[in-house]
Image (cartoon, rainbow, N blue to C red; front, side, top):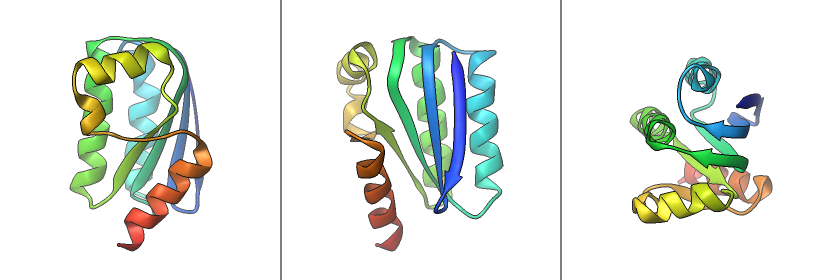
Length: 117
């Protein structure tokens, strides 16, 4: 899995590609989130459009990140989950827990609206 992250407008944008199946691949994702939580922003948008496969460990990492951001008064949005992640989120009913946006712009808007409320 490849991970790229950028910080814009106090929001951590993370793009993932490949398979989200756990360590060591998720270490970069967790590190980016931990670094961001110490910075100015407390929100995160994770692009799952290029994730082919996700297992229970990958889901666990996403849930853990969501908890980290919410504990600090922030939020996390998933961007355009590909077919397998979307089905797994629905099967586990986590689609009721995670906010999902169709595009990066929509995720940004959701996070900025949540921060201002």
